[in-house]
Amino acid sequence: MKKISEYTDIELIDSFSAKPKIAESAFAEFYSRYSDMLWNYIRKFTGLNEDVQDLFQEIMINFFEGGKKKKGKITNAKSFFFMVAKNRCINFLRDHRDFSDFAEGVYKNKSSDYADKHLTELILAEIQQMNYDDRDYLILKFYQDWSIREIADYHEKDEQFIRNKIWRARKKLIKKLKPYLNELKKINKIVLE
Amino acid sequence: MDYSKLINEYLEGELEIAEEQRLFSEMAYNDALREEFTDEVKLSNILAADATYETTPVEATDGVFTQLGFSIPTAAGRGAASGFWSKFSKTSVIAILLLFGTAVTSGILYFNGTLFNSDEKLTDNSNGINAVANTGIAINEDVNQINGNSLINAEGMNSFFNNLYDIVSSSFKVKDERNSTNSEFNRNNPNLYGLNKSSDLSIDSSELPNLNKSKNSKSFMKMLNQSQMHIMYSGNFAVPQMVPGDFVIIPVASDMMSNYPVNKKYSVQTKGALNSYYPNLDNINVDNMGSFEIAFWYNPNQNNSFGLTFGRSSFAQQFNTAEGIQYYQAPELFWLGASYKRLILEEELFGFIMPYSSVMAGASSIGPVLRLESGIEISVSGNFGIVLGAEGNSLLYNVDGKIYNSNNIGFIYGFKYNF
Image (cartoon, rainbow over all chains, first blue to last red):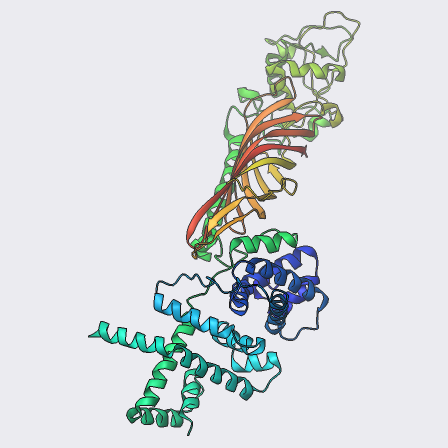
């Protein structure tokens, strides 16, 4: 008999509607695979600080309930999961459009490299200025390590379309970061000398 | 040629070798392209490092599982570690289990062996009466012959009766079945009576409850039980003074013996627990109701038992992962263990209460479980009893290379059936 840890993502989601103990084990296994990804996706997509936990819990619970109803109908578990996450994040942002608290002090990170931290904050601030689809492409590509092919399938777009989007986004980011990158080069040069 | 796109494809790992050579040839003398390449590499490094990456806070995990009505996943369940057993190779785990199994088996064989060899033990019931009480007297006859009232070795029988006299005469009166009158059994000359048949002496079942009242009688009952002989009294109750010497051995229905705390070879026991759990988790309710246990005991003699125990218990866990996240959870774990139990007294207090102590070593999916237990067994009937006591359990488990323990202590209650 196959261990729960050997189940594919699809098999885990199909088990959500099984007997309670099996459903619980399947959800716990799925959670262990994707919880960190979701947490960081929400943080980066929304730029939220205070409400991330509520949103995270809501998405996880919605996903479990949705998975139970869609037994046998899901062909790409990861896409389905991030579709649920993205839609809920967008709804949340629309519902809270007037909030001005977003992104302020959001990225209190664990890096000891202040320069990298600062650049990362700039990149994320830039990403959060983009429309929701572009934002999703970049987060999935840059931070969730999806391939161009996976993103294209998930968004039902041509691979070249996604590749161009990401390429343009990189150009835009480099332009934005250029002053900082130049500063870093100077610092590195001084350090090396 | 758009060299910017080539840089992107290079960073994606999608650039063909010929184009890669072209890109680097161009960069050799194109400063602007080289700078663009450097910037792209730096951007890629920053993105890959993801200085804002976070692991999911434990509060968020608790919230999700609590809202879904699920128990919070164990350390092993969330993949942080494969539990205590990850410290050992599969081979060493099997070796430890084999060693433990061998030790338990050796213990069982040892106790069986001493039944054959020790003068202080009563008898081996597999081949009739081989030794009687602590005298070492042998009667080399088959139990079936005794039960069939056939003649047996007269010398041995007389010795047996003589010994019987020592044990019971202080408390009980026996009757010579061959005479209508009571006459005293003469231990110095047992052949006077020619006691050589199992039906020669008897005791009425109405006298049996009195046998609990003395240590000698307890020993006598134990001896008779282990030798598969039963006794019956059929004396004349009209005679006010029954004299010692008229006992013995005839086959009787076993239920007549059911009031006696006799040693049964096997027993089964079920148990529940009301425990307090440590570490104390403020916001997590640890469920007592899911705890249960079933134990199968092998009782090689009156005071020692070896058991195989299966059960489920809750364990409170508080641990930190390698990422520095603190987890609080209380999973319910199944475990399987081997137990040893010692009945503390030679005979029951008040005829029905027997104190005991036991230890158990077992294994759960995330680590070993150890237990100390003490309590009393209350005989309700010969085969059925109630168990009350206290226990302390300890679970050891491993998270990211560090060993933690979870403990509980409390009261236990259960039932026991001998067979």
